[in-house]
Length: 506
Ligand SMILES: NC(=O)NC(NC(N)=O)C(=O)[O-]
Ligand SMILES: [Zn+2]
Ligand SMILES: [Zn+2]
Image (cartoon, rainbow, N blue to C red; front, top):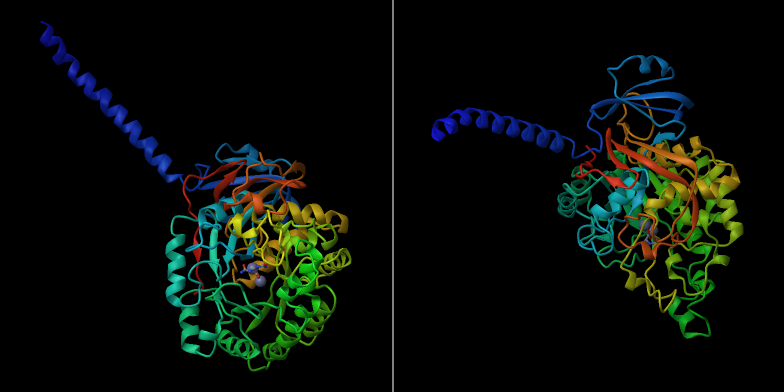
């Protein structure tokens, strides 16, 4: 009797079990499909009253389909009528193209104790940056050959939360070897980068104008840019002479004296002897030279303006720290502020803002250049011996917005300086603006929201303690970041999987 009862139950149990398996598999595959995004949709709309487009700010909706922007409409009422659409309404938060940082040191592989792809790209996503172009130095080895680029690409695999492209290094070893440079360019670097002064990294020696001339002639063929750290050691006091003297190495002004504006000016003068070749009809027509992290807003900037007027293919960037801080306010011993070229005085800072607002400075970049806290010598506070570099990646949007208010910076200007122009420099035609056909790389943020960057604020860079921005009060909270239509960040949460794409030039 009891046995027969059990036999009757068996088919029922089997049915129940198969139902359970079916639902488990369904939900598992659904989950695994969406690991790249915090949203389950491939096709959806986002709406807001402030969408920054190249044609101006509109109230409307952006249709996102399979990672691209499928349409942009101004009448959202029609959308609400249909229950077919997945719509995310961001109210009056700003929808802007994701920021593109053409100057980030992610230090991976080889110095991941400084930063690394996972932490750096999570910080980027949390800050509204959707593409980073990684510098060829501070990782180990430096990206100076096809093989070393391949190490980068391998290291980035499944470890980047936003898209990452790579600059290659122009160093004395490859500068006079066009075949080696072509290998590096064919392997996919978006352009080259070189230093006119010691970089502090052993396998990244400095180049002179002849190396740069050679580099430009190869780059012309590829129509890719050369980025240059433009400072040249002049015959002034050297850091060690200063330290031996009666100078206080804990005073920022001592450090400032080791890297005067004349160092930037001298380098730029020398560069301009070769950028002439980039003019239409010149021997390096098609090549482009980009000066990174300009700090001197006087003679150096005048030289750049003049060269542009003459038709040199030349652009220049500056960075948030030169716009936010001035030398006078840097406390003694606070080496979080040490970088090269140095942060100069308040009058210089003001002139940089003016040049930016007038369009003489073409774009912004972070120059996020972290290290291990111990190399910052925070306890010692010796500006001459501490490692240089500012840590800022996650905060660049609120920083430039907050400090730019005084100068009347607009949302359209931010989109141009942080997205459109950088996309052009990096040769990314489908990035940099909210336009139909472009990748859906988008930041949603609330410019009016104020926040304190205190220790309980979620910060994703590896070493928040070395950032000069900790402790400051800023405007502009990032609420959501989309990369190729994937919601990779939303209010403190990141997507489970790192689905950023390594960007290689073809
Ligand atoms: N080795 C570096 O990271 N250098 C960087 N350091 C700065 N800017 O202080 C740079 O971009 O020159
Ligand atoms: Zn530099
Ligand atoms: Zn740098």
